[in-house]
Image 1 (cartoon, rainbow over the protein chains, first blue to last red):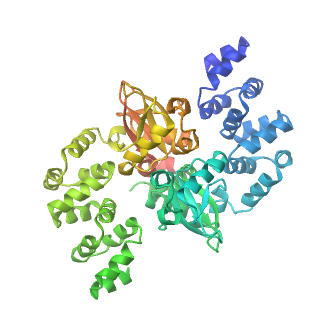
Image 2: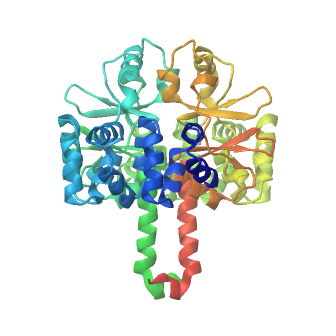
Image 3: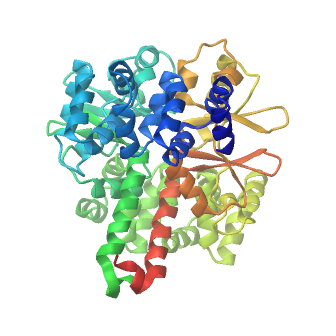
Length: 262
Length: 262
């Protein structure tokens, strides 16, 4: 960090950039928290675009707001399009109305539709925690077709070890891990390789119940379905770890005196 | 569950087996907890072997001990060889000495060596929580070679979304996700596709510090290295969720009265 300040003060920006892009975006977001606005904004604008949107998604809401207020509409556009959808929703939920307007104005119609769809779910429900950026295959794909399809679409999707399988009515009928996909023969069918014994939740299910299922079944990803069993989203374990922490904090506060020492 | 009891009492074992193999092993282990010994042992022996070893790994230590006392040496052999190594170690740690002897006697030399290696790490250290069943590639592999290698070895490894990359001195030099592996060109090199900006821990690091890193960096897997940076094991997020729960319970107990209501 001292190194960063020093390079910044000596205006050695190329050197500074070189150092930063080899760091973890989460660590850079951490450093920004302790920096005054004029300093971290220079650094933020210095970063490659896709890297800066990653840093952005890890900033505190206060810093995020400051950034949005100090960058161009084009830069906002890039950040919103590049961020994972669930991170975008988390961030929008924390922003005041004028900033939300500024963000939505600079968002593509498709993405805005998805954002609004997730924003309408009640707080702490599966729908509000899920992401819609997952990969799903049709059950009549061969493994070869599935891998080709994955190569086409996965780049913009969340990094998960599980893909989902739906039938012609979009009903979730199975899950398949990337491991199974790689280990299966090219000409076998997804419906023969997939796991039909999976756990799913409904959009309005409570996140604490979902956390309990993650624990019980040692899951990394959980499909979210509607009342017709159609796949509508996916919850990943990193978001559930946050829920578990929240939940435990609430328990500590709730339990109070009599319950806390046993 | 009533259905299971009924089929068992009517001695309709083929039908019972058919139902059970479509259930999640974790749910069957749950059902066993409420069943008397004579009932669940019949069911246990009815299950296909690889399925029964999965059910076994989710039983409580009491039930596990009962099972070990009531099955043949050959059946013990199969279970120990088929279970994931970290689950085997967890289970051995809970068993009385005579049962441990019985288990180790029925374990292959290779597996016994690995078990003893993990058992010697202090409780709550990275070494005691890690598994050694991961996939690692040499950094000079092409993507094609890596996928061929993965197909050969991954079947017995833990299901993770990350593989590890080591140099000729077994030093951990990078990580690569299955996603990146599938998306990369066949003839590109692993060292050009891997992520060199990863977080790792040492074998003696404390599991609570490790849980904090999982939270901070949203990880699903964490490599464990020795003092020469050589890869020796991997910790998966499901084990860390258990640590977080334990930790929070301890905090509730420790904090006591003054701290608990704020």
